[in-house]
Image 1 (tube, rainbow, N blue to C red):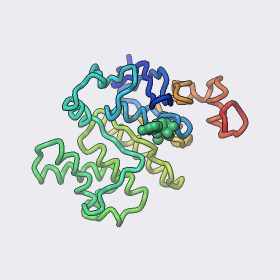
Image 2: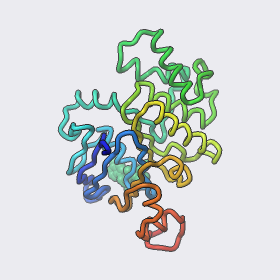
Image 3: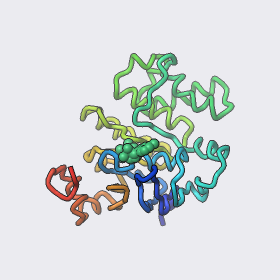
Image 4: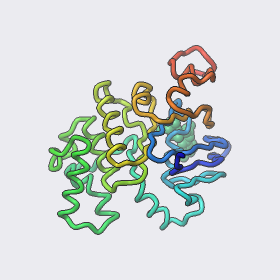
Length: 251
Ligand SMILES: Nc1ncnc2c1ncn2[C@@H]1O[C@H](COP(=O)(O)OP(=O)(O)O)[C@@H](O)[C@H]1O
Ligand SMILES: [Mg+2]
């Protein structure tokens, strides 16, 4: 029996005439890593914003546990969001704060913890991404991959039930990509939690995904295990996986 921690149910999102997602449904299985793949502009980040309650759909429902985010008042959304960790695609740490103080921000905003406990919790979070030694560094002293991992530490410092990663490896070299992918897998194990990862990077998806959803022109056209996606008879899925310019995907 698999438990569902979040559910997108028949969701349509449109901006005026422009339809971004059309009748999308998707389950996020508890304890699993679900990867969402698709071309740029397919609507992947929109799904992340829906799951965070940062955006409401034009129609349909988004559930976190049994709560319908579309009908939750803003103060309840704040509480729901405090149980979700988010690693944004272009998240930056604040330049003026140390790495440790950046990671501490969600604790200072959402808890009444004392400074000693905060320091210990932040050190644990940094250690789980291999950055315990950077607590007192400034963000400008870290490399791109280290900054990403510091962002992960900030996303998981409150021990959220669900962690959302928007394009965690985009723009990183293959070695750092490998390290980041390992970090996501280790964090999931350590938190005993659930992750949704948006990525274009097929190699890293195949390393970490329990489930893969492929989004194309606003619809989820394939969903399943890595093996099931690889065996998909859908020519759009096969063209995406093969990276071929020949096929049904308009270029
Ligand atoms: N506020 C907005 N107004 C109009 N169009 C938007 C807005 N936000 C996103 N879009 C459009 O929605 C589509 C999906 O965006 P997004 O979810 O960011 O895609 P992805 O993350 O897959 O690249 C894109 O075509 C984008 O231009
Ligand atoms: Mg995006």
